[in-house]
Amino acid sequence: MPASRAYDVTHAPDVHPARHALTSRALHASLALTIGLLYLTAYGRKWATTQLESANWYLLVVHVNLGLLSVALSLGLLAAHLWLPQPPPLGLPRVTRLAHRGLLAVLLALPVAAYIGTGFDLRGVLGQWTLPSFQRLPLAASLAALFEVPLITLMEPFGRFHRDWGADLLLPFLLGGHIAAALFHHLVLKDGALGRIWSLHH
Image (cartoon, rainbow, N blue to C red; front, side, top):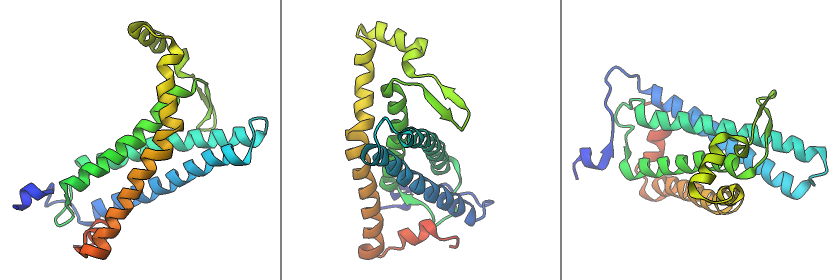
């Protein structure tokens, strides 16, 4: 199969080979750490505290801010995949790039679903601001009127997606597939794909 069909590569002769590798490495590592901390704070609230404890509230504030950070990092990584020129041979197979973007789409959808579905003000955003809950926004009442359903009915699917199958099933499945595919390329195919992604050299 011709390379132009199998790989999605943007050639930019004036771009240093390390540019994309450094950006991708930093964003990947930061996002992976953020996701781990998000799960740690979420399950820490659920299993190690009660809603009457102050620790529960502090963990929620940390969780909210980590969620906002994950949005920023996901957008940054998506922008790097879409627009940052990659010197050959750092191009990835198109199916791999689509899988990456699908994972990033879920990482972006989860915080949005949390905001729409939780129904409470987000206090302590970046240490000082309060983000009003979705149900306080004029848009919420307009959407409920448009679909002719109670506002809580409109919000409920988003809350379920964030609390249950999105965070507990879909995201772990996609993350596991992402890790498994990387290990398959590295250990079985031994095609150097993992090394090309992370290396700073040709």
